[in-house]
Structures are given as C-alpha cells and as structure tokens.
Image (tube, rainbow, N blue to C red):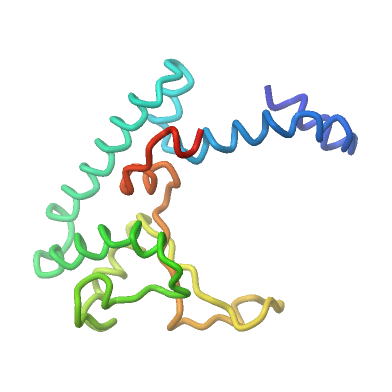
Length: 169
C-alpha cells in the first residue's frame, strides 16, 4: 500500500498525490487513534476494531503505571502518578508551557524534578522545550524552563484522555 505513494512522491506527481488527499487524511486520523504501539497496530491491522485497540492501549497504560511501583524509588511514586496523569489535561489547555501547579495546587518544579527525570529516562515522555526563535541550531534557542510533556505514543495519549473514536475518525 505504501509503495505506490512512495513512487508518487519520488516522481513528484503532485496532481495524483492531491487526488488521494482524503484517503491520507483518513489514514492519519486512524493513526491518531491507534498510535504506533506494536500490539495495537497489529491488532488493528488484523481485526480493524477500534474498541479492541483501546482495550490494548488501556492495558499498556495500566502496565506502565504498575511499573512505577515496581521500578521507581518508592518516595517518588505518588508524584510520578500525578505528573503522568496530568499530561493529557495539560496538553488540552492553551498553556504555553507545563504548569506544575496544575499537577497539584501549590506544586513547584523542584517537587517533581525526580519524577520528571524518571519518566524521561524511561522513555515514557518527551520533554519539548520552547524556543525563543527558529534558528539553527535550534538547541541554542531553547528555553529549558518552558516546556511541554508529550506521551511517547499518540494513541496512548488518546487512551489516557478517553478520546472517543468518533472524535477522530
């Protein structure tokens, strides 16, 4: 299925590519829901069942949260859970950066630095810093104090936020 698209791109056949626009948008919306976790992708490929995909995603999220207790230092587990669970709501807001006070009222960065480092080091979240301007190298213009957190997989993010399939498809 992807080879014809690749050929069209290589040949720069923009007119024909444009004719498939609706199909590409539909596939992109499916990706937003299914994400890229191998088990979810395989299930969707085999069964074409969005409900089953969501069950798998919820199971993966549950396993991640169980891993917090198994592998993280016990003193940061409650903060890990609060930080982790706040991400969908933080991304849904117009905030230009991550707000620790939205995790728990009165919270500050120092309260969550170990939990945040743990989530980043485990590869469960990506910390994306704001930049002051789009210059090269981009890293030179990072504002490390202003960032957003993104779950490693868009499908898992949708599952955390209980996004209904009808919202995306």
